[in-house]
Image 1 (cartoon, helix red, strand yellow):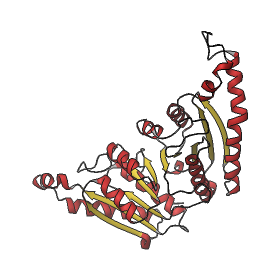
Image 2 (cartoon, one colour):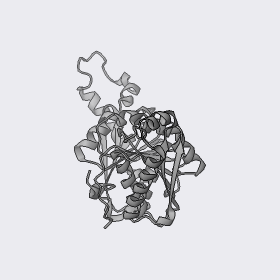
Image 3 (cartoon, rainbow, N blue to C red):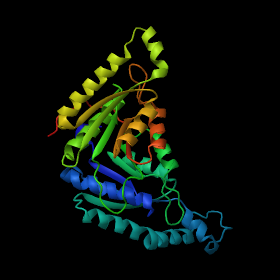
Image 4 (cartoon, one colour):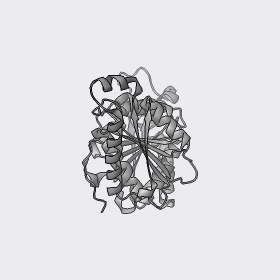
Amino acid sequence: MQREKILTRFLVPIDGSSCSEKSLCFTGTLVAALGRRCQTVTLLNVMAGGYLSQHLYNIDTRAEKLIDSEKFESLRRMHAEKEIMPILEKAESRLQDVGVKAIVEKLIRDGDPADQIAKLAMERDYSTIVIGRRGIGEFKELLFGSVTDALLHRDLSASIYVVGSKQSHVEPCAPKRILVAVDGSDPSRAALEEAALLAHLMKEHLESFVILTTINIARYAEHVEMGLKPEAEAASILSDAEDVTVEYGVDPNKIEMITKCGRPVDAVCNEAKDRDIDLVFVGRNGRSRLQELVLGSVSRGILHRCEGPIVAVIGRKAEHLTDTD
């Protein structure tokens, strides 16, 4: 994804749950701050079929083509109009109330939530997916939770922001403390670029920008025997990351660089907790020169353990573009 497309087109699954309310609140805060950069916000509800089971007694179950039946389509249409559209319209109104100027689109789809979200994201080339953590809709439709894991296994260029428990579902809460896990790989570079761009655009709110790299102690001896110098490698990774961050316009006085020894997941989650981090950035499907950080299992591990902050998982490749105009 080219730099000029980052943080421009948002896809936000909505189901009326408190978790999706938090993702909506974060989206509104972020998109309002982005101003003209953001072009479109799509509010999506995926009806996974619960409305059918609740009203099954209204349908002749002997019909061979139940899904194609006129009664089924009528039931779907009634459910969408009476139950789903009010949720989407309320969400649209909330975005407008917090100053979102982008075009807001409301969509309803049928099917498996992960499949529909991924399909739409690829068809329309969304830059960003914002999803709540483990949300359950009014009609007990499980939209999130396993959906996040499923999306991480798709070949999506969109960044996936998973909103955690720290985010309020009532009051706008801009991220003030950002942490980026880096290892020198291309996916971690992409995560760093998006984090730095966001920090630059929201600089009025930013308090600290933490860049973290990890020396995996379990492989330390092995790497030394190979003639590698893990400490020097870590220092080089952090130095390069700092240069990129400054070039994106982040205040150098707000940048903190940290090297930790141990398991990458432990290092990121512990640092996020200790520093009360609001937003964690991590790449996925990457492999560094030392084969340390930002492997697929690391991003999933961070998502499972960092339940408080928002976790942004970046799967695209870095463009190595550093202009901030």
